[in-house]
Image 1 (cartoon, rainbow, N blue to C red):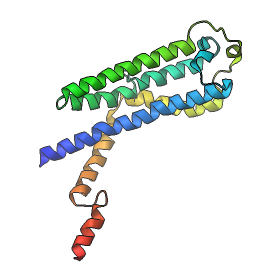
Image 2: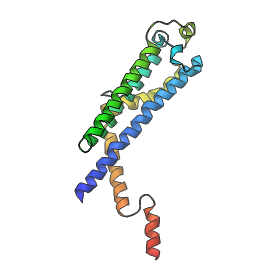
Image 3: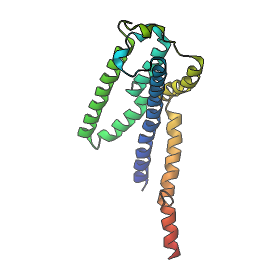
Image 4: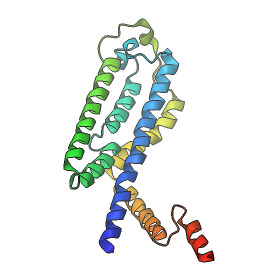
Length: 191
């Protein structure tokens, strides 16, 4: 019984950090894409190039979010992906290996996109006068950046909270109280 409960807790704890971390990294990337769109009114990668010269702070924040998204060790994305792959490899080594190749391909895509947008010649005149991050933008990006780095460097406080929640959830599920089980149990008791 204890081993089965431990495996259930491990399963729950493994997927939760990835959902939180994915929300942080993609949330940051969408915010940054929106900021860039508001400044240039285009989403075409070919309309950019060399932006690092005109918006270095924006480029640095974008790089942190991109590296988080591709699971660089030391950033939050690594924690969730490592836990999922480590937990999956023992049971599904072939499928896990295929999934890891997907991570590698997404890293290639993300880094090549970053290179096209931020490096190279600043050849498009409209890109020369794009303003860098404003105070308001820093105010909503800094908390996201903080958690991207903090969770990557010190994930244990978050994992401890998840373990406690997972234990409570499993306990409720065993009593028939989780996922609508309470209603079913009450209906059976009435009969």
